Image 1 (cartoon, rainbow, N blue to C red):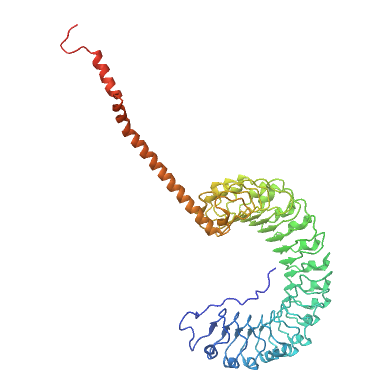
Image 2 (tube, rainbow, N blue to C red):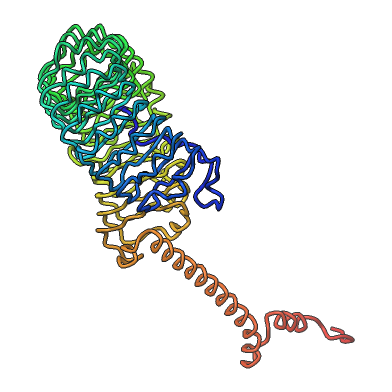
Length: 558
């Protein structure tokens, strides 16, 4: 499910660090991240016009008091450093709007220094080891719009959080909340709440007061039911309820007509809630591991679906309703009990990724070959029936970039793989391959060829001409050429060995051809000499003698 990108967005860098004039009197932006800095350089602290400063991922253990000289600073990233305390002078930055202190081992006792940053709009304190949030911060920062507290040890929020009336986004993932913070339900401007991976057992009815709520993440909690009042959040478009204890959804949720992304994976639904089929604006739907045996007939109404995950269920047939979803681009049906695919599968003309790993196909499902846009195919059989061959018709999939056919009983590969000009990844691990087709050397875009645990002894002699290969694995094969000690050194060593072998063979053939030519010439010169030594004449001389014998001598009469 898509969420706020926690890393700062890249900004145009007006000065690069390797530029000798990277600091001037009129510098507005500095990127000093990833430089192993132990302190904030004094040259930076002298830049009165500086507005944005990136010092993330360094070794800074202390913020210097001279930070107060950066009067115009608006954005400051100090995440992933070694900060434990915050100096009071940090609170004098009267224009600061964005501050990131994530990934520092901060002491809660130093956090009140932040309460003086009255212009702050975004405060990120992810993974800072916090057990509580000082109430003085929430009481004083009236302009805060984003509050990031993911990855801490919080069990509750301070009562003063109700003062954050402008708050639009709050991130509380991976904390220790057992009770939903009711204080959030009075913050009527909230648009995003992320409480994934906590210990929540219930959501209060007051959640319905958040009429501007758009994205609601409560995956990986202990929820067994949802409040009906959630239907009053009429702007809700993204909701992740995955990995809870839900068996059903409130019928009133069919009023949420703007739903575009829904996660229900890991719940014991057994049957798909009927109301899901009324969310006709859905683009992404996650139904992985929900004990489903089939889909409702009305599922075909979800004509806007682009992504659908139905993997790890109990389906023994491919739902025909899916063939009506013309916009579908990604379909995961892995780890079911499907034995065949319908010919109507070709109607999914926009399908780019298809996952069929771990099903019960007795032979390769040829209906796949009618998918012209397919770019990635997963049909490895780590469980279920093993495939014994791949048809030559696989070459019809000219858009295919990645083919995963691992964990089968394949003894050979189709030669048509060489004609697949876009193929980049071929995973044939854990099969029974004894040799590769020479045609594979024509797949020039191939960059990963995974051949572990087969019965290969040799590789095609021209395989080194696949110059784009970055990964070539041959472990657990009875390799003779290249020998195993070369194979364990990686793709470059294998390519070098193959190239040297090929050059040696070419030279050997040239020498052999030269030698044969020399022998033929020598024999042609030696034959007349041998004939003279034996007192024999050439055939031409014999012919001349015969003619002379049959003619009367000149001047004689009979």
